[in-house]
Each structure stands twice: as C-alpha cells, then as structure tokens.
Image 1 (cartoon, rainbow, N blue to C red):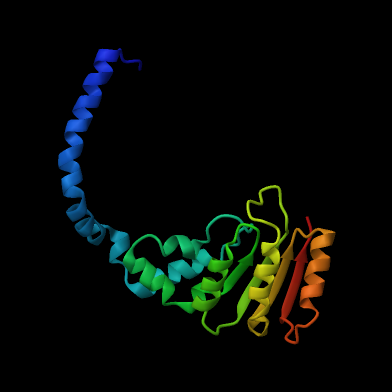
Image 2: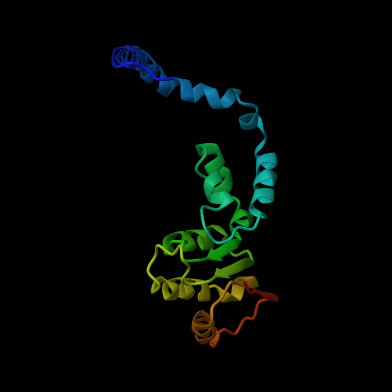
Length: 182
C-alpha cells in the first residue's frame, strides 16, 4: 500500500502521539508481564531440564550457544543458567568464540568434566585474527585434565600441525576423541 506524503505524515503523527503513553508504562508493564506467562511459572528444576536438553544440541561452532542465549532472557533464567555447572560443560573452540567467553564457560563448569569441540581455523567466516587460535589453545590446554571428550571438526593440514604441537605436553588423554573431516 502506497501512501501519499500527506497521509504518511498523518500516520507518523498518530504513531508519535501514541508512543509517549506507551513509553511511560513500559517499565512497570515489564515487571508484571513475565509472571503471567506460563513459561515463567515453571519451577526452576523443570527449566534446568529444558536447558540441559537444549545444550545437548550440537552447533557448528558459530553463533551463540543455547545456554548463553538462555542466560540473557531474564534475571531468573540467568541465575538458573549460571548456577548450574552442568550446563556449561560443552566447550566449543572456534574462530567465532571470544577468549573471554571461553574462560567464562570453563569457570561456570566448575570442576565437572568437559567436552571440547575444536573447529577449523581459519574459515571463510572468520572475523577474529588467526593468532587468537593460540590464545584459545592455551586456555583449553590449562584444563586438559578435565576433558571428557575431544572432537576435532573440519581441520586443515596446517591447523592439525598447530594442534599436534600444542598437544605434545598433555599428560591427561580424553576418554573419547573423534575427528570429523569435511
């Protein structure tokens, strides 16, 4: 639908006029809205189980993880996510993962065995400098004694040599190790 200039101005004026009362009511409205939604009435234990199921979904090394997204929904969900170390035991190391979040994930997993997935560097989608591979490897290697599994995905030859060099001094070997070649 194409509106003439005068009609379009009328629509904009009416929209602008209705935004002010809505903006004034938003801070209070948000406080009460979450308590009414059925999802927000779930007991914490059920929400944890739902989250565990969501974290079992494998990603391809890009984008935000399920548990990270969940921890940004509300303060209640954030508290639940952060206070459950088992939700943070899947550690993905990829060009898209910031070293600071890698550390956060390891800290949140406390001392539970972790599953480590290492994705290929570089990729066509890499936005982070390749030297961060070493930074992430150093972070991951510090907790090698906690590795329950190690999965290497889509690796190229030069990347494999870098990993082999880094892994030479590891005394703890994961119980399972698989490599996925693309």
